[in-house]
Length: 314
Length: 161
Image (cartoon, rainbow over all chains, first blue to last red; front, side, top):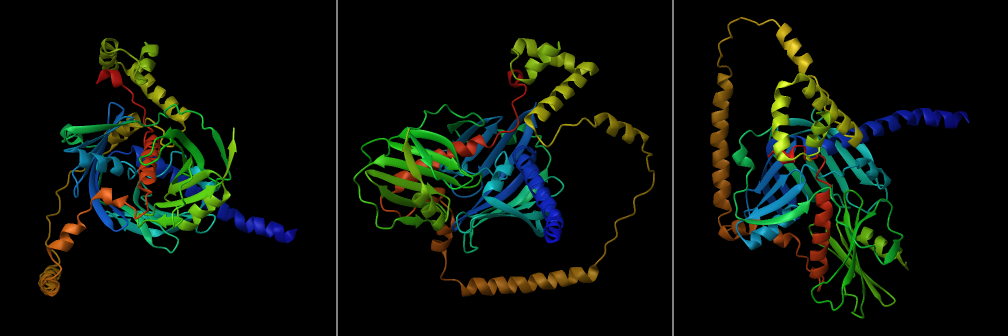
């Protein structure tokens, strides 16, 4: 009994510390989405490096943001309040713009970072310096080793803005990273800098509004802890005769697609393929159904998902 | 009047009603306080951790009370002469190293440089056998989710723009 009490007493400060870390992460989520600034940041994914410039300001309470690529294909992503639109000089650059809109650094955290606690443990690293500012490293490791990638965020303690975000693979290799190189806090006053330069545009819809989706015909059980169903759609796929059921899941960091189809196609030779950008594909046959999962998970994680899920007809 | 203010905050007020209200808001201290309070309530209800606490009055008071310091600025002294000399030496040395390195790596020229310019479309191309369509669909689906997490700030005075 006494030993238990001692354990509890000793572990209390640890719990309190973790609480502080989650609190900092919550502040970082808000700051990453809403603070005003002008900045330049780099984005490395796989072996590629790109640079973006971003202006963000509040105009009559309306958040306005413009980010443009400084290298590669010219493209811009404009945000006005909840509305996002890509702009580019031609169709090819426009589709690239759509991809660049997948992760909108520094808004890399989910709205409710506390939900990450189910699948990730948090710890505090050392101090560092990014874009001439001091920042505090926070480490998020998957509770189940090798099932997901680890995340490290370097957060400015005064503004809570994430200055650097790194995704690590299971062998500690860097898969993706974002980092500010120049950062000027405060709103951009020159309105011209917030207007798009290119002619072709592609609206990406409204943020914060979930499109009404049809209820899925199957109940998916056995998804790893932390993953929740974000949307479901039945969609045609090129090269597939019938429409494919597409379930989209998220655990706050990783995004996972599950495709279910009735098909007699062979399962491909390499059941799991993970690209240098960290996105992997894996397939498995269950009776007449072909299951395919795609997501930014390591190989072991994708295999666990495929092995454990059960589909129940509603 | 306060109902109108609330409607304006939610972006539900028609332009013709909004304009006189905003003009009045500019001159009416009571309305301004109400505006602040409404935002504070809104933030609290949304659970935002950066509550918009009004510190303007306190800050102005403190600033007014602060004494003005009237003293000449110290003239800027140029310090660190030896360091400057060292810097010149260092940059000359660096130029030498860079030059030598460039000369060494002559064969790696235009081809490499051109490849280094990223084409983001290539980032999602996985050497997967006939699985590209799944990857494309995943990007589309994930994109929608990625968007839903961007917005915290509600459009406030959309009718006024």
